[in-house]
Length: 344
Image 1 (spheres, helix red, strand yellow):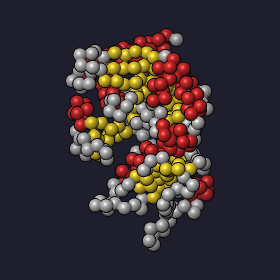
Image 2 (image 1 turned 90 degrees about the vertical axis):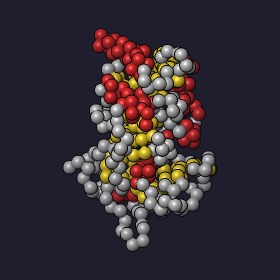
Image 3 (image 1 turned 180 degrees about the vertical axis):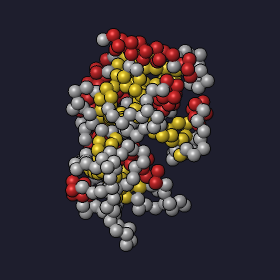
């Protein structure tokens, strides 16, 4: 039975002794099972952003709650929100929660934090950092390669878009999703497993974060959407239409850049050191990557990925008014590659 709410021996063993206690409330026994980033997860928290799976005897990772007090033992603080200790780390988000991530297998969540003027935290905010930074740390602990990308299943395979914050990753993905009816693979983070023979992109949650102007251009009302915690004029939208939960071979990685005034849109293929730099720049939370991997490991995996896929730089005018015209070089390349693959 799908998402049966029961415990299994393996999950119970992993969670034993780590129960949440709040006053006289009993320990949590309910379990939910999900698939994300290529991981089968057993969680004591309901995670509506993730696709449910049947209960499994040996989940890849568990998510639960417990008392986490003070700093992580024998740790090195990297900044005011992150502590690192061998194969563990602790992420503290003031006013939201504290997340302890261990050995690429466990995430312990502590919601007992000072709330200031807002004593009740939105559960969605707790899940936001769990599904983002905490799971990102767990992926790095497993020595996988999480990428900060938006990706779609195009006629030419899986194409992923990267770039600095505000480069338009989510906007491009959402526009192509609605205009071309291409299934969204992921928005924000997806992962490559280095031990796999080909570069399979394992998706995260099918949720996009879009600015108000992008939503307006797409004809999507903001009423009822969840506002982004950090940016008041940005909204979360679940893009379930045709969303893919399985892995897909990554065909291309596209670096997004803003064109200068008067410059037309252009798509340029990159190779060698330029392609390598784009892959390295796409790594999600590189400070976590460096904490749990050697620089040589990250470089080797980035070089390997750059050699297995096509890498492009796409520059476009920033106005959404001519978005369809600006996307022409990108669409032409995707259609060309799709035609070639049909002839092979």
